[in-house]
Image 1: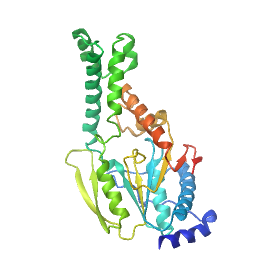
Image 2 (image 1 turned 180 degrees about the horizontal axis):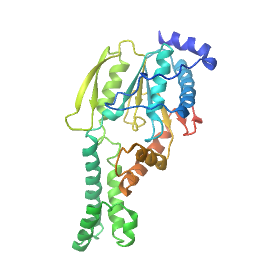
Image 3 (image 1 turned 180 degrees about the vertical axis):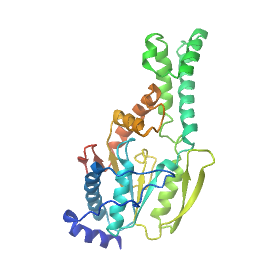
Image 4 (image 1 turned 90 degrees about the vertical axis):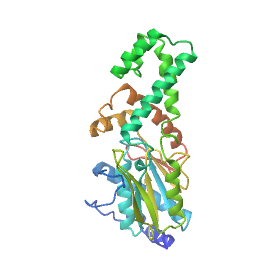
Length: 303
């Protein structure tokens, strides 16, 4: 019984000996994703482990869903891998689920959709505010070629561009991290099946090309804890979460991380900066409802 396992760990939690990370330790199930364990994050994960054990011990005997959310570079993947490893080593069977398998579009198409929404809503804004003209369109055509239409600096020469950018930004707010972009229903289906005790669940896999979509049947018959690692797992649209953990970071840290990983060749562009700012606004709101909040330095700000 899980309750008995938790009670036994609680007896020696403060002095529990954490096993050293190993090469084949579990990590998120995103295809091709590699996790490099940072020594700096190990004590953070150990601190979180103790917090989570105490919380689960307080809540009773059931299957647990723990969400780990935050911006890119906040340490979600590494922390989730370490937590999954520690739980398994402590006799609590855990599985790490990556929410990055559940967008509606592959990265390339999703990036294009974001740009399309920004530009479409920007143009509508110009029409609404009676600021559209053939001259403005000619300027936009040139800015689109340079991919600088979202850059606030361009508005210094074309004041009407502020209207375009403001409406485009609002359009993006209605897309980023929302149902149009992320398949929350399928995520919730998995969480619901797990909580109801399904022995096996078909888990989605998604690569970076349109034909890289499939499902793997995973055995959950003896799994006690499912950890959902995802930027959006703190959303109110995700149901069935027992404990939510926010790893706090800033847009600047996120951008630096994306540049470091070369995840996006345009990671330092004005458009990506705007996307990160919008995502951070949503993360900050979701952080208020998190059960546990940890800073980048490893300080537990809320528990």
